[in-house]
Length: 114
Image (tube, rainbow, N blue to C red; front, side, top):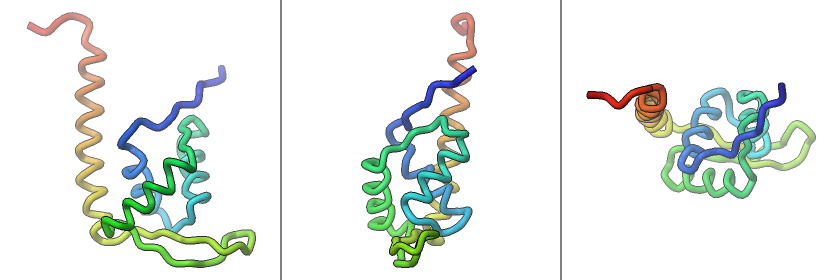
């Protein structure tokens, strides 16, 4: 059965980018490809959402970038997580996990709680 592709929910792009960059430094296209692979192609993030997120994260000093060569020998900007980025990711991941659990709790409740 084919699944429908989901657009990323507002406010999650930064968190997902930080997580992907824990795996290794990547350029923008590789970040999108990693997210597609990690979600079996079900989560869709537009370039138009990714690059502003990378600039926001860099401005907040959560990621740093440097120029390098991509797999196909093209000049590309590689992003890597900073120590501060790791701290923020840890806190945000805890918060999102709690939030998702609470939403699931409500959605799984059949009758109004007393």
